[in-house]
Structure formats: C-alpha cells, structure tokens
Image (cartoon, rainbow, N blue to C red; front, side):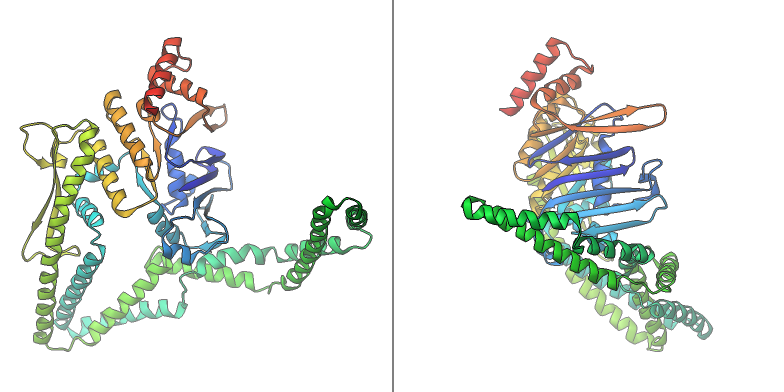
Length: 553
C-alpha cells in the first residue's frame, strides 16, 4: 500500500506531507481546488511524462517522494531493490529546465524504472480514462490482461515481427545494387555512431548523480576535513564535556545500577563520533576530483543527449535502434538469397502464425465468457438491474497483426428490450463511469495490483447511484488500498480516511492546503458537499451525520 506522499514545489503545491490509510481514502474540495494534482503528483513519482511546467512558479525544482509498504511487492522488484527496512522509497525530481532525476531506495535509476515499478504497484483511472473504452483496440488489451495471455500475445508478436522481417528481405532482394549500397552506407554509419559511443543503460543517471559531487569536490573536501577535525580536537569543548560526562556516569553506574544503559549509550556515542571522524577523513582524502572530470562528464552527457535526439528518448531506445540497424544491415548483405527460399520461409512463418493465432482465439473466447459474467456481477449492484454486457471476440482468417487475427469489442445494453450494441454507441457518461468501475474491479482481482486510484469515477452520476458506487469502492477497498477523488458526499461517506483540499489565492500567488479531517470536520465537509455552502445549516449538519452513520453500517 501507499504509506505516504511528500510533494514539494509541484504545480501549485508548495509543500505537503500526507499519510494514507489502508482501505478507502477520499479527497474532496471545491471545484478547482487542486484535488487532481495529488493524483498527478503520484503519477509523476511513478514515471509518468513530466515537463518543466510541473515546477511551481519561482521554484528551482519540483520533487515528489512516495513511500510504499514493501510487503507484497513483486519478487523481481524486491530482488532488484533490496532494502533493510519495510518500505520502498521512490523519489523523483525535475528542475525548471526540464531535467530530471529518479531514485529508488536512494539509488539513482532511469525514469523508465519508475514506470515499470508503478505498473506493479498502482492502477490509475483518470477523469477521462473511460473515453478509452470507446476504442476497440483497448478492449483487446483489457481482455488479454484479464485472461493472463500476455505471454501468448508476445509469442504472436514475435512471429509477426519474423514475418515482417522476411517481407523486408524479399523486398531487399528486389532492390537495385545502387539502392542497396545507399541504404547500407546509411545503416552502417548510424550503427557505428551508436556502437562507438559505448552506451550503458544506467550511465546517464550515474553521470547526473556524479556531476554535483565533482563540481563541489573542493567544498566537500573542506567540509569533511573540518568535520573530522572538530570531532577529534582534544581541546574541543564538546569532546571534553563528553569525556567528563562519561566519567561521572560511570561512577554513577556503580551507585545506581539501573543507569548502566545510559553509560552504554554514552560510550556508543563516543565510539560513533570516532567512527564518523574516520569516515570523514577517508572521504576527504578521496574527494579530490580530476580537473578534467567535469568536462568529461558534461561532454558525455552532451553526447548522450545528441544520440537521444537522433535515435530515441532513452538510452534503451538507442540500443534497441542499434539492434534494429544491425538486423537491417544483415538483411541487405544477405539479400542475395533466392526469392524462392525467402518465400518458402515466409510461408512457413505465416502457417505458424495462423496456428498460434487460432489457439489464442480459443483462449480469448473462453476468457471472454468468464469476463462478461464477472463484469455483469459487478455492474448490477451499481444501478443496472437489467444490464447486458458481453465481450465479443471475432476471428478474421488471413489477418496478420501483433496481437493475432482477432477483433475484440465490448457490447452493452442498459435497458430491457434493447439489443447489445458496441459500447461507444450506447453508453452515457454516467454509465461509462460505472462500466469502468466494474471493469477495474474485475481486472484488479485478476492482477492483484495493491493500490487503485480513481479520479472522479463518479462523474455524471447522482446521489442514489453515488451511494451504490461508494459501497462498491468500499468493498474493493476491503481487499486493497483505494484512493479516490470525488465530488459526491455519498461516495466520501464510505471512506476510512478523508482528505480535504483547499486553494488559497493572494495578490501574487496561489497555494494549496491539504488536511486529514477529524470526525467532526468530516461532518462539516459532508454537509458542504450536500448543500454547497461553506457554513451549513443545522439541518445540513444533521443530514451529514445521518449519511455518515448510514455509510458505516
């Protein structure tokens, strides 16, 4: 679960530290108060795309730190980032120039690593994500995720890539000698440029971490030597007082045995101070930087930036481009193979593709029935007593794609007598929000992601349905942590923790305040949400108390 979030100079939030509870956590506030910025900040910490616009006006940088309970983390993440504690500490910084850094348990990492970790920890449902349900391509992704077919889809994608490569080779064999030579020259130049750079996946983060140390080596050395000297000076008043206190407490221990622990603690403090002094001396002796190292680091970073601009946004993309170029070079060099041999290989690859695609279709069809049933079970309590929902899977012979030969689409009907139609043709905004909630519930049970985030999942619905949605969120939160931005009191009433977001404006700035509400403050906020007034009447307060009491039942 998400234990805490520390946000500093992000958008219009100057600084806030938040602790979260297990179960349902809600965030409320006036429209435009900045509720969704909290969700945006969490997404930033977990690797979502960021720009200098995220830095608060006038600040040098923005920073977000998210601390997760390490219990239940995926084994690969635990192995990659071992920690002596019981938490996973994620931190990301971006400066006003758009340059960023990322850390996991204080270890510098590429931002892409945060994204990979985030996929295992948090499932986001943004305000407009339900619009993705209008795209049939998204439906296949959701079905495959539910059915756990990612490995089979990867196999299909590999065969599809092999087919495309063979087609490319056949086309290469038909090129003129001059065209082949032109392409070879270009591909070889690009491949050589990348390989000669000798890029390493993690080096950019390491260089960016090393740079401030090298730039400030003289200051670091001076501070370390001064610290060591202060700790070791025989005439230092602190050292003298420490020794005197130790002598007195030692004598006291003979008279008052229960003070023995205090004596041990003081002795440990003296030993620790000597250890710190030794470390400072050692570090100061090794802190001398080569005068040319700063230029070397800056030159290397410039080189990496140039290659990223030409070949990919991250180092891993540049290295992937090198692999692609190598394959293209080999295809052109070996393009003298007979067209007949290549066509035979293409025929074999296509047959394998069709066999695997047919097997994948059978698994998708079986999973589609199960998914339809489970989604229906989740949707009916959300004000859909007569709903019909079905996952359609159609196979098209002769179709080649990275996902096979299927077309997947969600079909929906909310009224009796109405036939099933594509979701994009029938569902209203409020219906779409509830369908997404039902799907998220089913999918979260399938992939066991520990934290679910909903940003205004109640958009387009009223109070009666809002209470049904609140109950459903509460049920989900009994098994995993849920964070929800809401404008409905009927949803907020089910929370175990309630955060209120307020915006304050002055002549020169805007700031956001976020506070965790007490029981009495929850009553006042619930009354405001019900009546729309800052100070509610006695009737509004009474109504709020009744609502909160009913939600706890």
